[in-house]
Length: 378
Image (tube, rainbow, N blue to C red):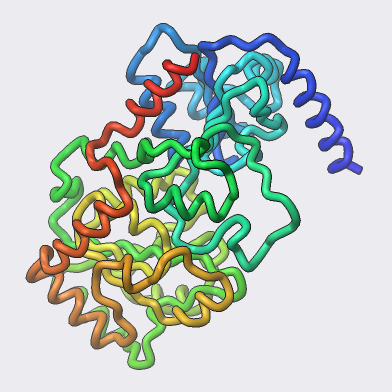
């Protein structure tokens, strides 16, 4: 009954929104996760905040009361609570609506691409199959209610056209606002201490929990000795569904060189974590496409590659678009760390090749391009 009433409420509001006069200089930005302040929504909002442009009124909408209170302390009335009269008025008047995931970013409202200009900034250069190409969670038509879809390259544009079946002119190739952070300092210099930091970011699996360090020769004590000897720490950022993974908890026990950051901490910002690490450890997570912009080593653990391709599918050939060691044993893993510590540039040419393929721009001006686009359409 509650869901039914919500649907009626949303439909009525959407109809009202279509006839309500629009303010061509008003921008509404939604957050993809109710409890988290991150992704392209955060970084484009802060770009507008720092720009202090007098021509546009811009607002960030959140459904989380605690996050609303926290952000409003810093940003004032630019932060609006979803279940408020102010949010309703901004929704009805906004000419531009920016999302980072989908329609739910501005719940309880629904974007309307008839009277509003809806721009989906998206949340990843997607590696796994999505949309109509996905082998899971497909229920009829996919409707993101958008006018424009942000991508980073011609390569990505072609695959997103296949995945979501929007016409070519829907896609705008500006790069992601969240990646502008990488260009505020020297890209080959991290911001934290001299200890070598490896950030372990595995992807989410639809049918099974992630196997952390899935090596047949896994030896926790031996790995810990190696990390201690070489002044290396591994920070694991699991998907929230893996944060209570028993194998992971066992690995963390009595192992001071391996730490975890879980999604229950709403201050976690993946872009900042990437900026502060020396080596990325992953499997099929699309996060490595962002990390390419930092030109730092990447190590892969594709332990279930064939199973993953069969059950979920990948948009690109794994070996063709990856640039780093593929490790399936602890011996290989340790050797790869050694080699990357001794020569961080060993895969530099391959990284450059993949970066140029997936990033049309490598300049830290994605937010500026998006802002100019909005100005030209206001």
